[in-house]
Length: 261
Image 1: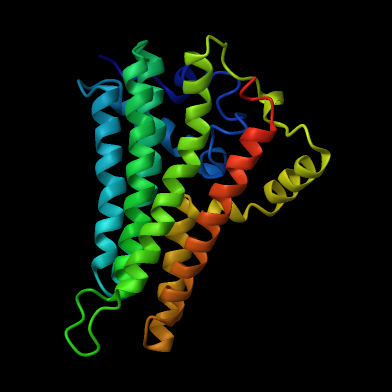
Image 2: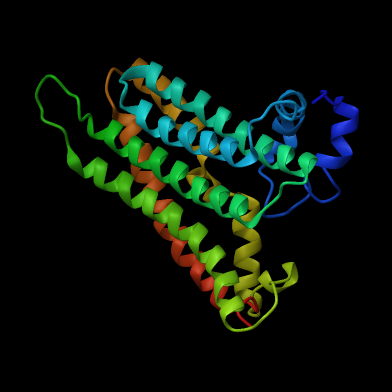
């Protein structure tokens, strides 16, 4: 198989709407990763690797990002941030390879969604274990409160995604067609205003993989100067609070909109 040029790839793997999807394309994809992924995709389409195999690698990279947070100090946080960037890259190239080869499938979409669930949950759970200092060799013993809060943040991140995905499940089982973008607007003017304010502030994005990994890295730098885990623990508490708040607000937003009608 010959390698296509970037110019040949672009109109096929980045059809109109891919970069402009309001809820489907990450800001990092639009900003830089889609351009990087094109350079990788042109090599990958000439190999025997399948889109689903790339998705499996994406999942491994995402889970590994959570695992390396158990490495103490700045090194663990830096490795996690790099692995999340690899995760994002693979998340781009699996779909691009599939579109170029005409191998898009429902299985691929399913694996992609499962991968996002696992990766973001692993990162936040790993962050909680990092804050608990589970491998502390000196007193005091690990503080499991932080591991619990990390698990709360991980569960919240999963539930936020599930609340969105379950809209399609409910509509399909109810015999309805796919939801339209305009149906996401709450019927109540007050809720609609609150939703726009939340979208503008984007605080909910902090529980996403890319944003959380960058926050974890920044907090690790602060802890390096402070000599303890104060900022890491503050970050875990913050992400747990955001995840719980966003889970509840997102559920109210779904129920108050026309997405289930």
